[in-house]
Length: 63
Length: 429
Image 1: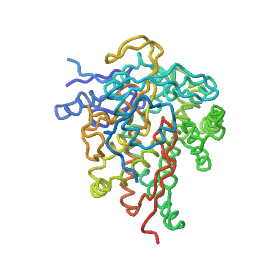
Image 2 (image 1 turned 90 degrees about the vertical axis):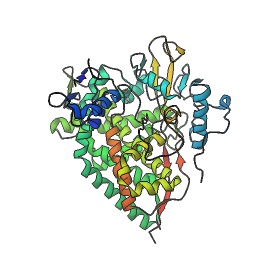
Image 3 (image 1 turned 180 degrees about the horizontal axis):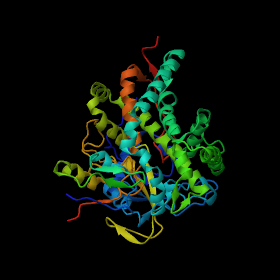
Image 4 (image 1 turned 45 degrees about the vertical axis):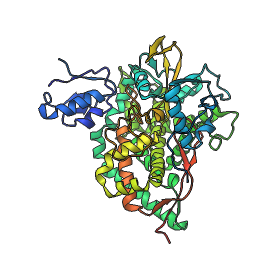
């Protein structure tokens, strides 16, 4: 699965980092980044949860 | 002792005035019954603004009590802005803006850029590294509380001896505020979030001056620390505020002062009230207390439920930037909305048995840290850690803590504050 970060919207609330710590990390610039390449099937539920719960709607699952 | 009752009694909504701060110091059962009636019958109820000497009275506001309406407004920050004031019902006078015009009352893109300066420090990963330190702070505070109790025949105040010092020490350490300045930080934060409570604002005819003085005190502290940090940077948040550039420029002194004040005040007051209200709630629900004490596996959901139950910040304000309609309610540009998180957090459309304290509640999509939108609580993960560590330590170190009187509630609509909560340690002889 592919997850996109809208860097303008993200305020680094860390909600995704809490829900899917293997996939997301807030960087020193206060904006989240996707760790590694892209999340694998094992992380799918956590990633969907993070996308749904992101307060700023900065995460998207294109396609 | 009064226990929160289910809001089944009839409420005369025509007699309710959410702008009357004495009403907010009244029994929670009345408050929640009123919220229930508002949700059912008047989801966008109109209220006249509170009159504060020295501040012009504005056009009034709508109280948003349903979860779905609150979320719809919160998630459209371009239509419902924060920039005209988020923490005050009247528009804030320009001279107060110097100290209180922080990012909480700012809109994107500036808001996001400034917030990101400190975002990293409040992430779950960073806070994981601070866990042992938070445990040490809590252990030390509770050791002192026991000593205080021993010197007073067992008596302690949950607020002064437990709930206030824990978040004060945590946020002051993160900010780099030295020991000797902390009592003053606490005193000034109390004034700033007093809601005008006469105990904290002596001159009731001139609350604006009291708020100005408190802001000036904390700004003076910031200026002293900022000068030191520019000389010798430290691994603290104050250094980040004064050295980080946004759009190629350092923050203005107004931005630094108001951000500094926001972090101190918000870091202090909210978690303190969550702890105080949590201790009170567990006292009123001994079976839930016993359940949590026996099961550390409950920490995660219990902390969320304490935040839902207590809703430490009762509301934030939004102002419409244009005419429009939200969930069938038509509004005009300039209309003010009070997002009553405390009401949404007991909306039966979202929470089953919302008037029941259920420490295992899961899922628990409460809005105690705010709803959707860019202003979601910066300190949410920190607060969760502090609460989890504090309650576990209370069970382990002060198992004999017993609340013995009524809480003295803050006369404020804005924070669900407790000024004093008398207790004793029954193990002290």
